[in-house]
Length: 383
Ligand code: UD1
Ligand code: UDP
Image 1 (cartoon, rainbow, N blue to C red):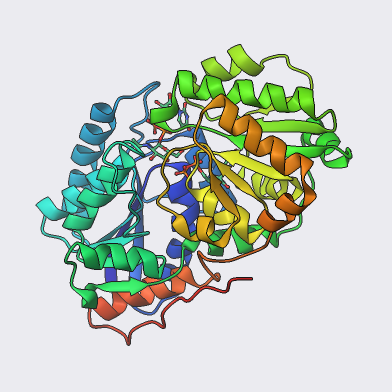
Image 2 (image 1 turned 180 degrees about the vertical axis):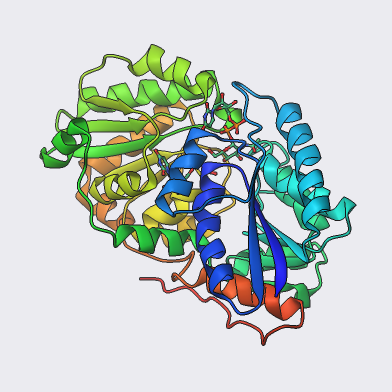
């Protein structure tokens, strides 16, 4: 059995790595050791609880309003010590956080092979999203085996000169997590959410957190939401607010105490998936939501100027709107006023995965290490 350190630190990495941990545990080839930096604390623990994962190592690095220097330095030093004591046969990192980059760099310094899950996403804009575009690029350079979610991600890696024999197209493991979670029995426990679930109002589900959106861009988005609520009396906003105090300040200033706005703490994934199912429209700057919402048939307005997820834009279920108040208002207003425009976007499509992303990723790593035959290649079902 080969020992694999599985590294993550934030909520979305945990959601997307949980199916991989389970699959490694089931596989005949690997013994996983779960190493969390805990770059997020409460938001990470919510996911660990849901998927019953107990880390073997927890670096507990999070500090309030941490800087990129804080995260990267603490994660690099901590992960280096864990890898040195565990001496794994491989390290698996995920996506594009500072934990991802520090994990791949620490493994490289110890000459341990690196597998990168969700490899190959690119905007080609160094500062958007910031610092994720550079995190994933730098991780790609340090990676030995690239687990690319889509054919488009593979094409990005090939254009950078990566050897095709080191790339596997797996589908995104977020769809594995989503399908597993959406199938679980569920009832809202929070009376505010039960009330939302039972009204006839159309629900706008909102999340925001990107570093490049902090401050004025977020304020513009929230002003647009207020205008939408004024224009459409039969709508309400549900907004689970990210723990970052820099997000919370602006949310409180612009939306605090407002009628038909339900502000909540970050929700456990099971609750959140069920809210997504109930939503009419999703407005977000999140990466993961751009992958999940299309598979539930929910139109997404992306509150960013760039996206590394063009597949859902091409399929018509995601629109890149940015953070300009007028643009956000007009696009949401159009979709709430024009049933034809709405229906065009509310097509259920699955460009990102089919629920077998973790299986292909684990087999891809096994194949790369000479332990198994190659996995089949993910190809999307366009609904
Ligand atoms: C991080 C990742 C980003 C990812 C996002 C997912 C980096 C640089 N950023 O951004 O790529 O898309 O996570 O959400 O890797 N906080 C808490 N409790 C928590 C989590 C966060 O209090 O459970 C607060 C802390 O004050 C922390 C702040 O939020 O300092 C920001 O967290 P941080 O991980 O630095 O940035 P995110 O915006 O969450
Ligand atoms: N999510 C959640 N609870 C919430 C908000 C989001 O479980 O209150 C989930 C969401 O379904 C998605 C992931 O968290 O899977 C997205 O995380 P985030 O937006 O923090 O990060 P990103 O995807 O932008 O990296």
